[in-house]
Amino acid sequence: LGFCRCLGGRPSVRRDKPARESAAGVTETPPPEPPQPPLLISREAVRSTVFGAGNPSLPTMTLDQFYDFQVKKGMFPAPPANASSVVKAYPGEVQRIDPSEELAAASEARAAEADAKEEAHDEEQLRKARQWDEFKDEHRRGSGNRMNRS
Image (cartoon, rainbow, N blue to C red):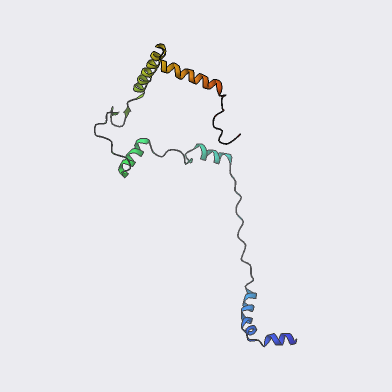
């Protein structure tokens, strides 16, 4: 009892008493949150997002629309007025010339040149072939740079 009187006489204890009393009333717990509904994912819902239009990887515009959009933004140069690679048959259809014919002709010319060198027994070609054959004899397959792995 003497101890309590001693503490009660101190000014800091008297000052803190209203704060302690108000803190004692604050101990109420907030109301609990309502439970979340269960998350149900059906197989059809997932399938529709993957194979349907809900998939974000499906294109939203054609390549021509993308090019026109980029030209308007100034990211791509405008097409030349007399473009020889694009021929319009009628408005709305674009025909592109296939460059594969030119590439095929060039590869045939290279193959014919290589055949002519081989048939003529070109010294440079023979030397390269012999060096490659010797290299293959001396080095087994996969024995190149192992990137510091043994």
